[in-house]
Every structure is written in structure tokens, then in C-alpha cells.
Amino acid sequence: MSLVPLAKKGNFFHIYDFRVKAGKGEEFIQSFNDFDYGPDNPMHKSPAQVKDGVLCRDANDPDRFWLIGEWSDIEVHKKIRKYLAEEMKPSFVGLIEGGGAKFTCDYGEIVSSTPQDILDKANAAR
Image (cartoon, rainbow, N blue to C red; front, side):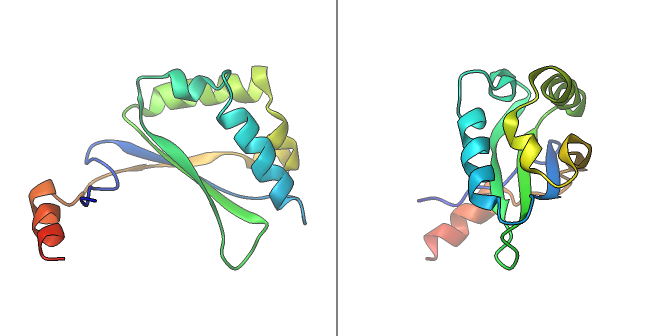
């Protein structure tokens, strides 16, 4: 498998850093997956979503999670996120400590990304 950049320079990561209620990690993951992979998730319908998000669990704290995805437009993500929070209200949000008030994200602009030719050379040397 070829190496590819994690993200493209000029795009943005949305980064959620949150905790779920104690001992609710497995239930949260299932509820999140049911919504995220279901037909009603508007995030997956937006052309501004460059790469699908990933849900990560802290290896040292099973109640802490990060949700990271790549988008080309912060404003589009904010608009969809607002619709999710105010209209859809997915059930997994109720398992987060502090609820929807704590399920917020920061945005990071991708300012450096390894050029593909460098990754190709690294892959060839493997």
C-alpha cells in the first residue's frame, strides 16, 4: 500500500476533544456509529467533506475521545454542525459529559503536508 498524506494543505481538520459519561464508552461508540453510518447523517452528504472523520479513543482513558475529519470549508461544517445540534439531536450526544455544550470542535488549518513524491520515495525504500 502506498503512503499518502493524512491531509491536504489548505484544508481544515475539525477536532472534537470530549469525554463520555463514566463507563459509557462502548454504548457511546455504538450509538455514534449507528448515527454516523446511517442514512440521515448530513455530514456525509456535503461536498465540503474531503475525508470522512475518524473517532479515536484515548489509549489511557476509555472515557476520552477525539473526532477528527478533513473539510475544505469551515463555514459549511459549522452550518451542518448547527443543524445536527439544534434539529437532529443525535442520541450519542446525551452520553457526552456536559451533553451538547461540550460537543464542540476546534478547527485547524492544514499548513504543511508531505508531498506525494517524497512519500513515494519512502515507500520505494521499504
